Amino acid sequence: MLETNRQRLMIMACIERHPSAWEDFLDDYLPLLHQVVCEVESQMRFQESPDGVLREEILAGVLTGLIEKDLSLLRYYRAESGLDAYLVVVARRLAIDLWRSAMSRTGVSVNRDIADDNAKENAQTIDEVESMLGKLKPLEREAVRLHYLEGCSLGEVARQLKLPMESIGPLLARARRKIQQSRTK
Image 1: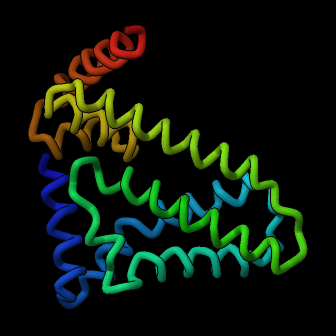
Image 2 (image 1 turned 30 degrees about the horizontal axis):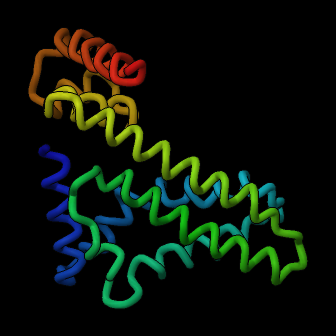
């Protein structure tokens, strides 16, 4: 909950063009966006040159897509899911289109079926994860998001949630059980 509020405020600051808001956004989310671009590249089985120039162009295109039309893609974020999940879906769509364009420009054959299947699969996986997280209590959901989706250590999770460290393991175990139960239903 706290993270979602922070994310919402960050997006609002970008939309309202507060000084350094875009830099703060990039500090938090550029690594995630770069990872998405690399994963799309890999899934499309495109071999980038060793210098990575094209990959950086695709990343720049994703960032441009986020700020085009008066930040319309950021304005669309409604905090119904975590900003991370929203950005992964949006960045994947942008990256797939940009990689396809780059591949056709360079004469590399585009395996559209693989890219389309991967995009559908990832969107479906994100929907499933969001659905499963929705069945958790807010504290469990936030702990799972921090630990499993953002890679925070148990100590970091405890610090951010202001809970004793020894309570995080059992909290995550309960959340895992609930998720496993929801998957078998």
